[in-house]
Length: 166
Image (cartoon, rainbow, N blue to C red; front, side, top):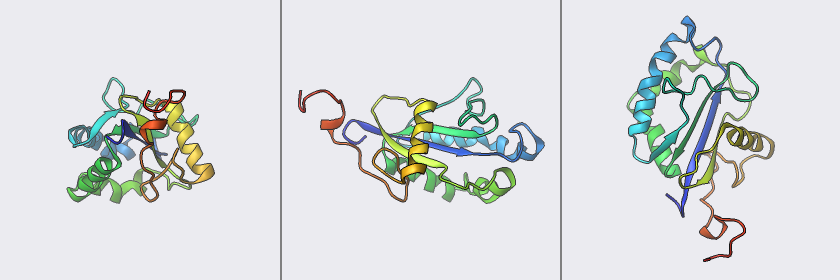
């Protein structure tokens, strides 16, 4: 955790077919193992999930089919370690190698990172807003990427309206 902040992450993907279709069957079959690995990873805090334990029923950007992943991590280093470790262990490697079979190629940013107060779970409205901000302005402290990230805010700006130290 950085100064009482944790890292929120949203990534989106537009599937080429419904998630329960034969075309996405191999992808769907891997969701539980990827989610279980994330939850067991050092630095994992929270992820948005429905009754089935994934997020395939949530809708974003007025799309009936777009898939999302929204999670919170202790730090950018923790999320980076999970992603690179999962790829190295083959967990994501097969998924990433086959993504063109399952998802449209992203024409614009599809992943956004931002800082939230520790214990705060972002909702989809906030996550959508952050991704749109990134698309409109590029990386800023309010919405950034792995390639261009920003440090967590200082404790003085954690609670607007309160005097520093008070």
